[in-house]
Length: 195
Image (cartoon, rainbow, N blue to C red; front, top):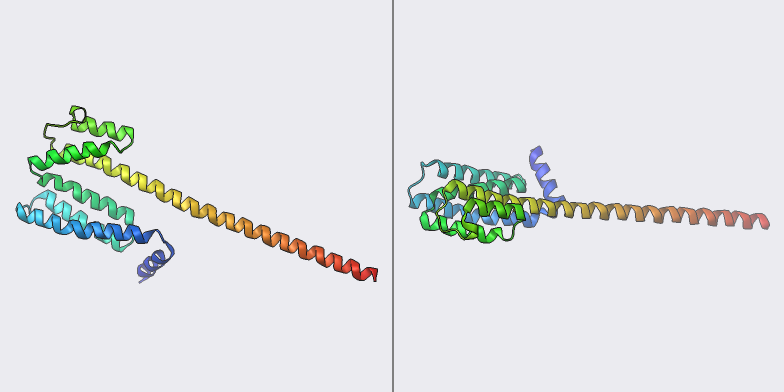
């Protein structure tokens, strides 16, 4: 019961959770049937990648219910990475090419690491093994996690500084209001003494 109250309070007082929550919920709801269909199509229900992917997807849904959005995204991305083991040759090659293209948007060290992992100076024609694709995909996902974390820090810092500014301005107004009231009181006392 206490956890439900905490979650409700967190939901009400944090404006940033609404879009992040709905985005993760949408991605999970779209990906889950795709994953289950892939597992059924290639009859992989007993394979380790399928089991682990489903466990991570359930974990992402659990985190979503608990409003642990960052943890939910990490579990969701991990579940998607395991799907690489189910890809056929053409899918892995296409995924490697898309990772190389997306690496152009990443910071330099991650871009260089992905190019080194996938080989051939950014124009891969060799089929990478699933473990290499997973590692390259993890570098990409870490970049977006770090970037979003920095955005959230900036957002929180903005609201903290805005709150401090409001408090300081309020304190200045109160200080000057009290000072003006004291001056008027003293002037009123002096004018009574003159009478």
